[in-house]
Length: 529
Image 1 (cartoon, rainbow, N blue to C red):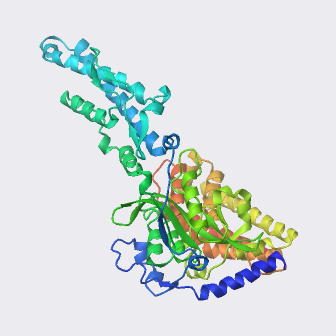
Image 2 (image 1 turned 180 degrees about the vertical axis):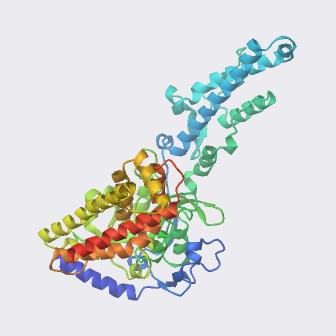
Image 3 (image 1 turned 45 degrees about the vertical axis):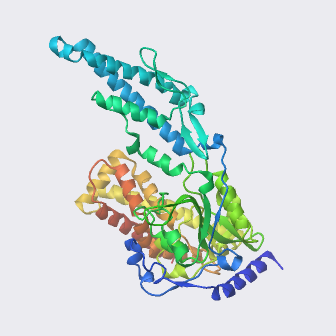
């Protein structure tokens, strides 16, 4: 049996399996939840009963929770973002306090005269003594002085910050002792600075300190959780960027509606690490998380699982390797399917596809599941199954159109500036301002790229002339343009703002760009009919 025949047989079996899977109803999965975003409460699919079933229980992956061992060595803990960012913020605060105190001390010492100076003489010693304390403290937390390696220590699975040397005052007296907590040192310094009417860093109000406290969890308290189906799976997916991890799928982010597609898709689940601590009554705090996708390996003709990009990313790294080991172990012990981490697949990721789902036809494209690692559907693979010559012809048509679209939009913009085309004065002023600050063609390239990046072409199952496929491409693009624009509009607005130096009527200008693109697509359709 050929690989293609194996894949077709597998897809047929998958269709039969999904018919018998347990399901939940869209009207029930968030029942009793008080905090829900409008894009969920107002969506028609959550207001009428629609079945949601997940493939994972059929492959041994029911929702599960288990303890996990992430015993990171101190060397790895020191590389964590939350540690280095706090140290950097503390150092910045110390330098600022030192400079301000020095300036005030010098002002009293050298600039004040007579009674005004005499009244503040007692303060000079206190101020200069604080300057000396900070000067002696700074080398211990200056990362360029290698002190970072000694100050950052571990105790019972937590990071602790301690002095490695005594801190002496102007008279050589030890004010802060070796191994004293840096946080206590900062608190005492703040009291002394405040007593002298001087500003000093307040650690408790700093976002870096709050992040440090939230992230600095003992290893023994970690759990790994996988969910996909039922109310639990739907809620975990909906809140995956609302429980300690921020991403573009936050409810007020750029792509929140893509959560809808992930909730509805048979082939999307979520795995995450948690400390068990509640996060704003939305569930346990997520420390690391990734979406898990059921896909088909077209090379082997077999199903497998892909772990998508991990959030949050660590500075200078594409993954937390220790957490990835936990994810891989948790999944591979529950199912016999191969498990892959998408960012490690390289070009091989092109050989995987997600089975096409009817739900994609029932919701707008802007609601489809967001993929950090773009994966084709089996319909996309049919396009690649064309003869090499036909495939090249289709791609050539599409690539030429992308260039032609930018050129045509540029010509219209230039005709507007030359008063050969009459448009709203606000649009004309915006285009003129873009030309003064930016390249018109470069601007159009950036805007059209935002559109093409979100367009997913569903090619016809069979055709003879590549022009037929190209015509289908243009028609699907024309119909999808409205939904794509709605999804990408925040990024389009950012692109506009980066190219102008005036206040712009964003809606008016976005409407015009949309109209112009649609006219160019229609013109291209006429040219090939």
